[in-house]
Length: 229
Image (cartoon, rainbow, N blue to C red; front, top):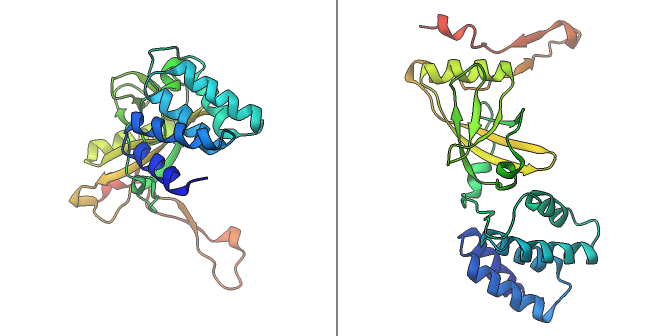
């Protein structure tokens, strides 16, 4: 396989140049018809261009060559609710956005998911939005469509932090028939709480000659944060 062509195809996809990506991947499979990576990329390119039937055709071809190919099987599952003219479009994000930082990021599986059609259009890297109205915090697409909700305890925490002045970026980490995972990223913290990250976790301090189960110590919780002046 021509590695230069493959890299060009990947670069076009990262830049959202789907027509170019489509052309390059077609050049690759002309010489290497069983190249499953190129076939998967071609399927994704067609999906981004709204050519869902063609996208499904190439994904199915991948599965005929490699029946256990997870990319193709997940793609077909995502596109099941889409038809010709629909677009599996995504916002192209800087991979650095997915970096996890202790205390500042949290990966969450959403509950009570929205319609299958809305979920099928999500892609890793999509920027989405918090909706802090109501009992539970929910996540909406850029067009305002409901995607899913947080658990009660996380909703309570996020609502409190937003009220205090914390701000967040919400990014789709994965989306398939198994569910939707998002990355919550703290992007702003009020000066008053500059030393208090959003997502404190339980820590265990191990003291010599003391059984670990007897020395649990938790970071400051946000039930206490309101008392911090």
